[in-house]
Length: 388
Image (cartoon, one colour):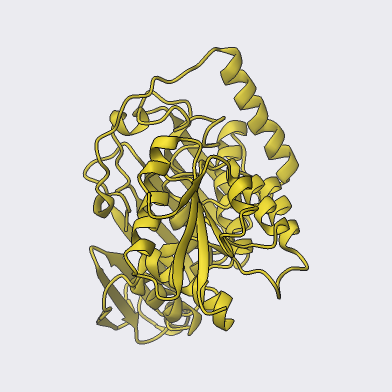
């Protein structure tokens, strides 16, 4: 095989954007073989290839070698499993599933197929050179043992018009959550990719605090890691102007990433050692102020598409293997579980318990007759839709 023929299921904002990039030749050796959507008008937007009303029809057509799933969240699990069983290579938009139990079902469907089918997730923020540099510094021990992580990521501001643009948006039945399941899977993935998973967390969530929605649009979570380090994660879609500030404190100093700058205030002597050995009561370690240069935000979505293609054709290691997507989903689930129960939550969570509670939320919403009005949305400016 010299080229990969990919089919896209779901021609919403992201699916159509991916189709446009592939048709424009931006991903060498990847060609668009077919598209699928339940909406005929959306299929008509991509007249260059054959369109299917069902994903099953596209999978059985023989026109594709791989599939990109860009549908609403709940379908990621069922379509991913069906595509794997059909022998296709699979790339899933975020999140890979809505909850941990579905992640486990999806991952189980790939087990034993690792050598034959490439299975990846669209965690495009892993291509961002700033986050790659931060991760490399931490893994190399430049900050020493991590003591505290704070991430304020509130530049995901969304309007009432955004939430009204689709009846599935911001509902337990349609998305399975709010900011944690829609905007923040990228940040939650980066959080665990860089720092690992906490062993316990506590969260407070505002459900419809800023918008007429039933799911969370405001979250503050505190975490504890196995080594005793603590973490704070704050996010919202109702705050403007928003903030994106990541602060990491380790034995060897403090790193701050904000407004496309990484500043590293480095202790000449690790803080714990200095504290134990100095005879002075109010002394602090001498420091170096280091500005770390980084050359941009990387290739983002197109880089993940290229990596997926190269993995199929050349065996290139994946930037974001899909099974790793369970971690960001579990962090989101744990935060919601803590908010629902008003208790700390130990990780890993009981995925089946969470699934039952989520289904109860869906049933409660249906019983109350909650139904959103949908209105046509203005065209999407993708440059403004991804928080960094």
